[in-house]
Length: 308
Image (tube, rainbow, N blue to C red; front, side, top):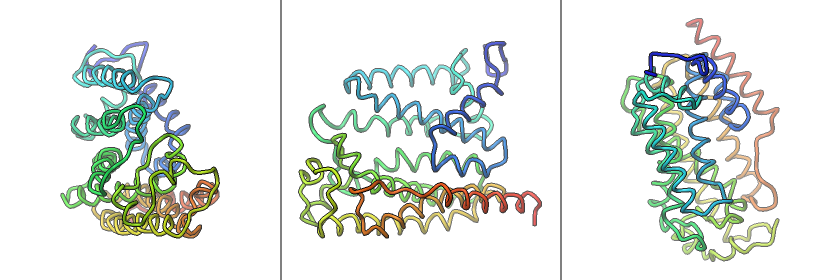
């Protein structure tokens, strides 16, 4: 079957519908921004998210060894490459993503980078050593692969013509991922992962073991709060790029980006307001606040589509 053909078993409409189901079930903060997009762009974003989710799930399957997970990811990626070049596929995610990348001129290399980000933890450490990053520059590369690349894909769906949008999208992704890292410090440590750079731990006199071997719910000490505040300050700097990106993308897509930025930035502000205690309780933005942000985004989308 070629890209232009359909079969009774799988149609493009059904493939996108499956991706929307995955996004609605799993995307959490992202899904609120998807809703504020016109249908064709929303379908494409949901397809990319479903692709991303599949890669993450294969990478994070802790019932398997690292070697088995890496093997499964490589096999899945090979199947995707075959589907992307026009081979028959019964996978609804591949089917939808193939259409999305052609419709919005998304380079295949970006999706390869996205998958590469999910494999970094599998390749950079032995099975019993904690996953760590030595410096912020090392962490930036990880954040680029798992978050900035998503931004570079999204702006192609959003639409843009000014090349400056690409750097701003990269840095917006860094802001989002640093926010995720702060929120998930306790959860990641339970999985033998510490994404806070080792150089920053040393600068603030925070032993790695104090994060990995922590009694549940123990609040941060002053050194740990200072460490987390430094990461938050970096994230705040990168959020400025989100504001610079906004006027560079197509007008009808700006409300969706605004929803996403508002929710993530609100999450960072809640972490800051809790004085960086990310150990006693996982920070989140209440659903009511997300819905209020979405409501404003939908109103702005209506205005944008009317050309007002």
